[in-house]
Length: 380
Image (cartoon, rainbow, N blue to C red; front, side, top):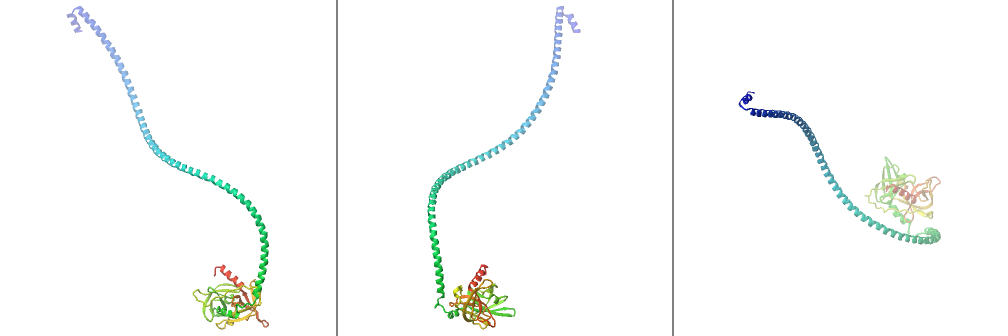
C-alpha cells in the first residue's frame, strides 16, 4: 500500500488509472490462475488416484502374467514330453510300417503259392475224375472177374476134395511103407552110438547116494527122470570115457522128466542123440534100452524088446509099454529104434510074482513137449 500511495503521489491520474486498471487485470489473472491451480490440483488428485489404480491394475496384470508364464512353462514341459512320446511313437509306427510292408511282401508271396496250389488242386481234381472213370471201369471188370473167381472156387472145392482123398491114400501108402522091413539100419549097430551117449547118474544128497541113467541130446544138455534127481544137491555124470558134474535146469513131475546141463567149457566126446515121433505102426517093432541096472559099472548095458503098446496115462501124457529088460538104475535111459533114434525115456517097470516084462517109458512126443515148455520159459 505504501508503494501504491507513493506511485499515486508521483504519477498522474491517468497513470494511476492505468495502474489500477492493470492491477484489476492482474487480480483477475491471479484469480484465474488461482482457479486454474485449484483445478490443476483437483486434476492432479484425480491423476494420482488414476495412477494408483493403474499401478494396482499393473500389479494384478504382472501377477496374472507371472501365473500364466508359469502355466505356459509347465505346458511347454508337457508339450516337450508329449513331443518326445510322439517322436517315440512315430519311430514305433515307422518300425511297424516296415514290418507291415515285410508281411505284405510275404503275404504276396504266399498268395502266389496259394494260387499255384489252387491250380495244382484243379489239376489233381481233373486227374481224380479221370481215375474215377478208370475205377468205374475196373469195378465193372472186377464184377466180371468175381463171377469167374466164383466159378473157379467151385472147381477148387472139387480139387480140394480130390486132394484130400489123394492125401488119405498117400498116408495109407506111407504107413504100409513104414511097415516094410528096412535094411538101412541095424539096431545092434545103432546101439554102439546110443551107448556112447548114455551116462550113469550118481546123485548125492547129504550122506545118501542114488543112481540112474541120463543120455546126451547135444548143446551140453542131458535128459533123465525127475525122480532120479529130485532134491539132489550134487549130480555126477559118468561113462567109460568121461565124467563131469551137471546141474538141474528144469523138471516136470507129471512127465517124470528132467533137463540137466554141464558147463559149456566141458568138451564132450559124445555126439548127441536125436528123437523120432511114434506112429501107430511102431507097435510091435523092435527097440533097444540102454542104462546102468543097479548102478553097476561105468559101461552102459543094452537090452532089446518090442513096443508092446502106445497109450495115454491119467495126465494125458503119451507113454509106451515094452517087454525089454529094465532094472532099477535104468530110469532115465533112452528107448531107441533100429536107427538109434530116441522114441522114449525109461521111467518105471511093473513088478510082482506073476509080472514079467512090463516096462514103461514116456514117449519122444512127451519129451518134445517138455523141452518146448522149458524153451518157452527161457531156460534153454
